[in-house]
Image (cartoon, rainbow, N blue to C red; front, side):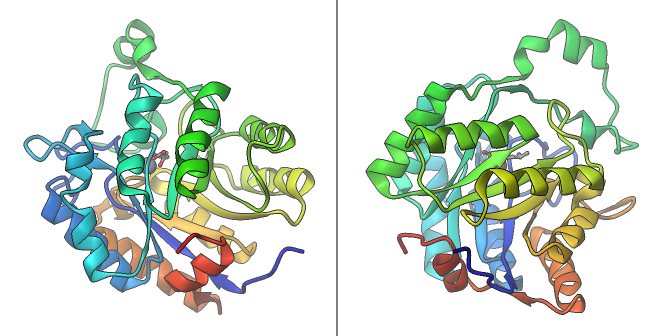
Length: 306
Ligand code: KMH
Ligand code: ZN
């Protein structure tokens, strides 16, 4: 029987692999800055820290375990937040490369992307007045560079290397309704056992759009497929971030914020830090009469290895 926790877990995705340091001075990419922003986000109320690494010289995406180890020990020493290490990597990297940081760190959680897609951030970028690009050049001439490969073999490999070998619990990233069916199929084959934790994602071009009706649809579909056997959270890209978080709270879900997903704090105003977004969503949660979950609440809710 699914327990109702009555508390809302805030995940904060600190830097991601999409935005570049040229887009915002607040986007952390040096190890000390990633660590400090993560610690500040945890202090502000984030129970889960979703982490990617960057090359410290230029902020480009890194899958080198050493770059993750430049901030993970500091975060572990200063917070008891649940660490969630991305296996999203960057487009065109192999699943083995994407898994390696989590194999090294053996975190309580890792992300697991539930289907292949044309992944592009137009949904985010189109909202930035200052960031224009040549979409024909990018998405048509260069379209192979936008394939985000997450085959069933890849998904099974992540489960084998991290779930079975390290007891890692997954944030199942579902960018569209079909990904819910992929997860259901994997559960039927015995790959994943209930309860699962699903991140409903909105507003990535290639996935389902950031229309609130789609959140209802994703939730209704997940209820039908998983019944009481799942917990869920919502992440929406760009300007949809806070409206979707608010709606998720009102529907009994959990939320994800962070500069990975949006660089803004309000229309036209860049966020000064991840913690600023966490403080804002926390205010919204508490104003709506809900309580914010602690890391230990999340450990219980998701039966993490601790
Ligand atoms: N960047 C987000 C849209 C991952 O790290 O595995 C989804 C994400 C993927 O966080
Ligand atoms: Zn991520």
